[in-house]
Image (tube, rainbow, N blue to C red):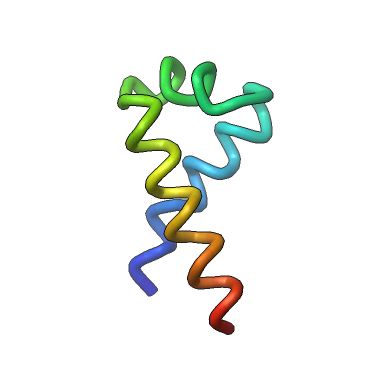
Length: 47
Protein backbone atom coordinates (compact mmCIF):
# COMPACT_ATOMS: atom_id res chain seq x y z
CA UNK A 1 0.00 0.00 0.00
CA UNK A 2 2.75 2.42 -0.94
CA UNK A 3 0.19 4.74 -2.50
CA UNK A 4 -1.09 5.89 0.88
CA UNK A 5 1.65 8.49 0.48
CA UNK A 6 -0.18 9.82 -2.57
CA UNK A 7 -3.42 10.49 -0.70
CA UNK A 8 -2.26 13.75 0.94
CA UNK A 9 -1.03 14.88 -2.47
CA UNK A 10 -4.42 14.08 -4.00
CA UNK A 11 -6.17 16.00 -1.22
CA UNK A 12 -3.88 18.99 -1.73
CA UNK A 13 -4.61 19.01 -5.47
CA UNK A 14 -8.34 18.92 -4.78
CA UNK A 15 -8.19 21.63 -2.12
CA UNK A 16 -5.81 23.91 -3.99
CA UNK A 17 -7.47 23.43 -7.37
CA UNK A 18 -4.46 22.23 -9.34
CA UNK A 19 -1.05 20.65 -9.43
CA UNK A 20 0.97 23.86 -9.29
CA UNK A 21 -0.85 25.21 -6.25
CA UNK A 22 -0.64 21.83 -4.52
CA UNK A 23 3.09 21.68 -5.19
CA UNK A 24 3.56 25.10 -3.60
CA UNK A 25 1.43 24.08 -0.61
CA UNK A 26 3.37 20.84 -0.10
CA UNK A 27 6.74 22.43 -0.92
CA UNK A 28 7.50 19.83 -3.58
CA UNK A 29 7.93 20.09 -7.35
CA UNK A 30 4.99 20.05 -9.74
CA UNK A 31 6.49 16.95 -11.37
CA UNK A 32 6.53 15.18 -7.99
CA UNK A 33 2.83 15.95 -7.59
CA UNK A 34 2.13 14.66 -11.08
CA UNK A 35 4.12 11.48 -10.45
CA UNK A 36 2.26 10.72 -7.21
CA UNK A 37 -1.13 11.28 -8.82
CA UNK A 38 -0.19 9.10 -11.80
CA UNK A 39 0.92 6.31 -9.45
CA UNK A 40 -2.34 6.58 -7.52
CA UNK A 41 -4.39 6.44 -10.74
CA UNK A 42 -2.50 3.37 -11.95
CA UNK A 43 -2.98 1.62 -8.62
CA UNK A 44 -6.71 2.34 -8.62
CA UNK A 45 -7.10 1.18 -12.23
CA UNK A 46 -5.35 -2.12 -11.57
CA UNK A 47 -7.66 -2.79 -8.66
